[in-house]
Length: 125
Image (tube, rainbow, N blue to C red; front, side, top):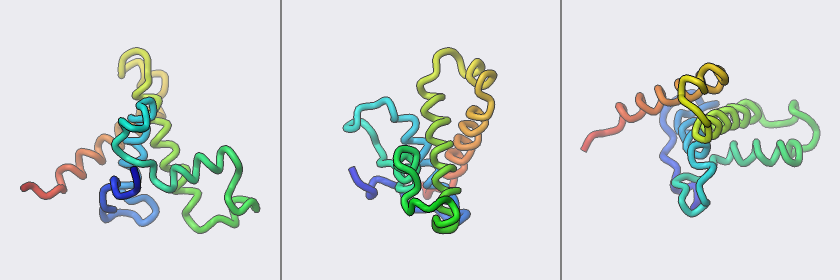
């Protein structure tokens, strides 16, 4: 499963194209599935975030030496991934999740709104 499974980048903020957010959300939803059942590959920024958590930043000098915007993208996709992973694996109702993990719930709601908006923009055929 390679990057060819990712949708084309949609127009958006160059630091956070919608497809990057949606791919991170889908990875979070599918985190507990076996690898052969997953429908998307993690975006490169999410892979970089995981590696940085494990081994530190790639350049080893600190956050100021990273390319402009890369850490923001890494943190963004990591937050989206974690929110959807937690939501998918929750115990209890959506309301209980929202009450106990409001910040994560807000991410889930915002991304679901983005998904709806992107579906509306898809060409009908």
